[in-house]
Length: 357
Image (cartoon, rainbow, N blue to C red; front, side, top):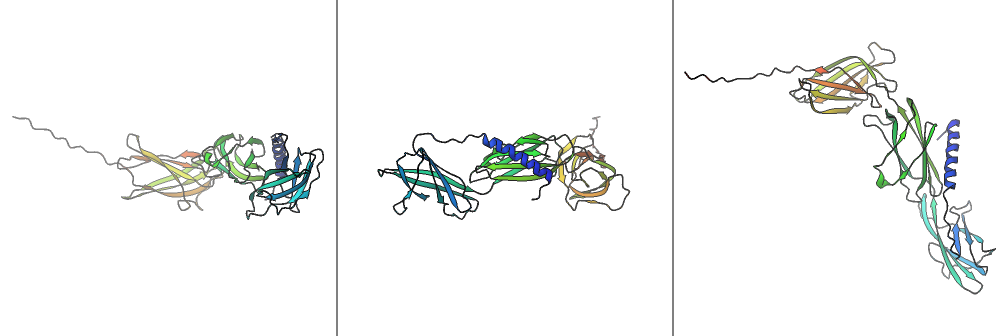
């Protein structure tokens, strides 16, 4: 992925902040007085792993080692030079497991002193070559993916790494603000956290960075659009063709929006002659076959002529009108003039008993 010069500078700055925070995380090293070992957690370019020993008796002279099981008689003893309780050795890396991204191994080292006494030590080695994370953004209910009309954005970072796990996550909004991002488990996937957006409209960028347990770095860019201005819908002509099984709604007019060329969704609701709503409002995302731009027609400034056709289903018998609202991609709505239906007059038959004469 090619990064702009400005974004490279931002990446360097964010990485610097992350490394500073990682440096503040203390590493616990046992101070028990008995011999200790630690692996370098990486394999060098010639396929070797550095093993550090400390707290060794000065009488320690030899070492034999093995991967994933304690050494046996077939493992040869090697000389080990100890200086003030410290020593080191380079050993060939562990056998491959077939998993190119993640491997777990255990290194066993057996030490022997001049009197023939032995001590068995072990330490894990994990080979982790990739950051495995899931980034999710929850967009507003009435918005298209990648659009929002909110002041905050709902984000989550899921730890999907079965190797060393995510250690730290941060993200920036449009190169201007930086947030820590909690790392949650897959079981917590219902959790989203809200983060304040910049007080402006237009295209912005979310830029995510994550570190795993071996300080592999992963990053992701996610563009989005913030639009808080409702569309302007003018010169509309609306008609409803009623049918026994289904009715058709047709709307044409001019649609003006800074970030959407055509309506994204429509909502309708029926009301009776007293203005009381009938049932729940129906929100419908328009398909490609339901809305289209019109080539002809007088163009208003920055507006697009459009026509949409939507099936309303069966219109309730007591419906006197339908209320309509069109939405842009960010979920901003614009109401249209209600469409009135012709409702048959209700007639009553009144029976008057004859008076007994």
